Image (cartoon, rainbow, N blue to C red; front, top):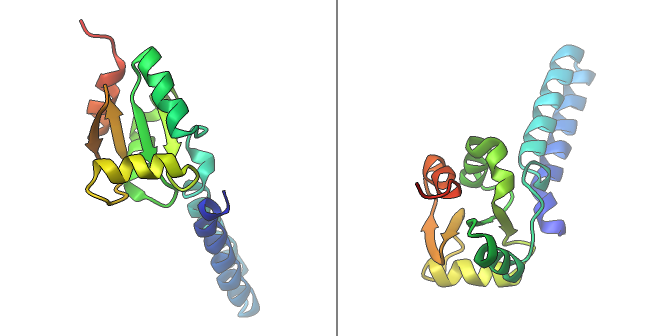
Length: 145
């Protein structure tokens, strides 16, 4: 749980230190703008932007019932963030597993990627796809014609 918040907390801390330095040198406006930028980056890299994660076993069970893909991700991963943002509202239809919170999820990703925790790894019908195109992932949600 705590590991997912390390990067966002570091971003806010660094932004605060830099902003304090700017305020002390008399640049209040620049300090406020820079602090806002660091807070925005922290929010984007936090678990808050992603749909609520579930455990790998629960995600696989749900996927077998409804056929929706399972996305294995971790906070701080720019490729995961790209996938999440490009999916837009359809991201909530997927089953998301944070590999930093779920050891079974991390093991599943390592098994699919030759021992590496490469994310995002998307499982569709039991087959892993590493860093797939968001358009392709969105197509997997639509029923076959």
